[in-house]
Length: 187
Image (cartoon, rainbow, N blue to C red):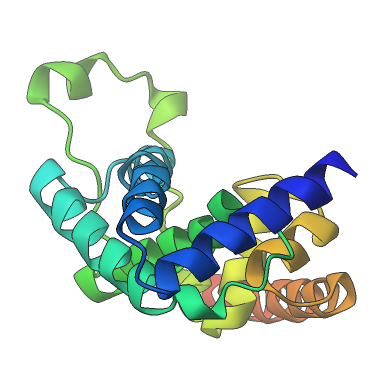
């Protein structure tokens, strides 16, 4: 019951901000200060694919998008959960457009990497990039964020069953891609 009241309060705040109330718009902007932190945390989990300047630019873009679409907030989750969806999609789209640059390491650090740590898993990420965006999102959330299908469904605003079917479809497609590449590489 507490979460429902919280969601209702978030909905009221968004509705008041749409009505043009200065105080409520200001309060909503304060709540949206989570956007840069969410983007920075997700960027860190991806291996810091965006630098600080790109991240700041992306935060502004994401905030504008959230602000323009705030009328779509339905109050089915917390405001922050709803905003996280924007952060996730904007970041992943930026990373895709950037061509997923590998993280660079200083030469001194590279020499200290043990052989077993130097395994290149880039082929898996490249294969993952070949999935449809919807399948790719679900597979990434399931494996990299260790989210449940219920959590994925809530985040992406789809049913848990849809999340599950996209996941299994994505995994099967990924398996096919990787097996084809393995056969191509074998003599």
